[in-house]
Image (cartoon, rainbow, N blue to C red; front, side, top):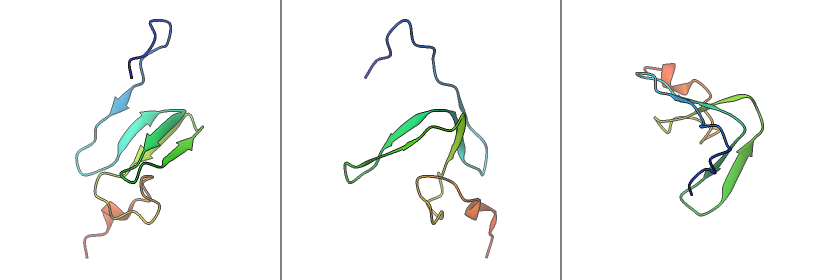
Length: 65
């Protein structure tokens, strides 16, 4: 789904051992076909799948148990 030329590009910040930080608002399509949306100015997307709020990061990646 390409952006129109008038839409600014979204910035995604990749962090080692952390979430993806995405400038919002953002809509995320999940594996089951459902979507979730956040209107925040920036969201943290979980990449480790430990988050209880997946796809949103809850900092569970910090636990090293």
